[in-house]
Every structure is written in structure tokens, then in C-alpha cells.
Image (tube, rainbow, N blue to C red):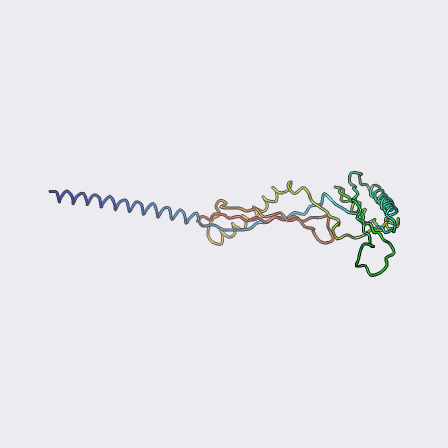
Length: 238
């Protein structure tokens, strides 16, 4: 009797264990199937471009003065700075748009590597700086800067000070551009899904690239082309 009872117990235990294994296998298979379904996705890129007008300009009006007397040199710098200031004001700029950099003075006699006698001992590199939102007025003044040469102002090029046209309202157009870039990305995903016999699902992941601002072309510094590229991953459904 003991042996028969123990046999039945083992039989019941085996049946329960088998059922548990079957149920576990079913749940595991279901989980794997769900994971595979959600692991199907497509990665696409979307972009948007917009051409805008610069809303800020920085124009350094650089000039040089030479003399053998520091006192005379500074007087010349002040005189020519005033000529430039008046030229800018007459061109429609406000006083707040104009500032004066500290002149850089070079004493050529302290240069131990000079090989010949110089005519002037001192050179002053000076700059009247314009920073304004009146970009059209500055463009007009730049085209007329030859008038300063006629007044004896020795305009000079500078490696570290050059004219810059800027666009400062990027945050105002970011939402619109990101929306267009996302729409562009979804079009690419829809085409991929169509070709593969799938349907586009929800966004799995998205990464916004950086906004790039550059001149429209080399001859149009006042016009800026803004571009953004985003990366988006969409789930694919059957």
C-alpha cells in the first residue's frame, strides 16, 4: 500500500511539473515573440533648411598711424577716430552702435631683428568698432568707405578683426525647423516601411543634431542658410 501511494504521489508531482514546464515555455515564447516584435525598427535622418537675413553686424574699422612722436601719434589717432565716428553717424548709426578700441602701439626701434633704418619709429593700430542691428546701413557704409581714404584715414586689414554678419534669433525658429525635420524623417521611414511591407509605429528614439549657420554664398554675407539634421528611430509593425 505504501508503494502504491508513493507511486501516485510521484505521478501527480510529475504531472504538475510537466504542466509548469509547458506554461513556462508558453510564457517565454510569448515574451520572445513580443521582444522580437518591438525590436524591429528603422533608423532615418530628416533635415530642414531655412534662409534668413542677418540681424546683427560687427564691423571693425581698422586703421594705422605712424609717427616719431608718441604725443603726435595719439593726437592723430584721436583725429582720425573722430573722422570715422562722424562718417558712421552721418550714415545713420547711433552713438551706442560705435565704440573705440584701445590702440596697439609698436616701437620699431625695440625690434632687434630689424635690418634697415625705419622712417617712423612708432606704429599705432587702431579700431573703431561698430556693433548694430542696422545691417543694411553698415553694408551701405562699407561700400562708401573710400570716402574715409579721401579724408586721409589709412584703413587697414586685420587678421583677427573682420566684418561679421550674425543671426541671433535662432531660438525663435528652432521649433518650426525641428518639426519640418521630423516630418522629413517620417517620410523616409514611411517609404522604407512601404518597400518592406511594414507599417511605421511610434518613435523608438530621436536625436537632434546641431544647428549649422553659414553664409548663403561667398557674395551674400547678409543672407544666412540655417540647417538642422535629426536622427529618428521608428518601430516597424506588420
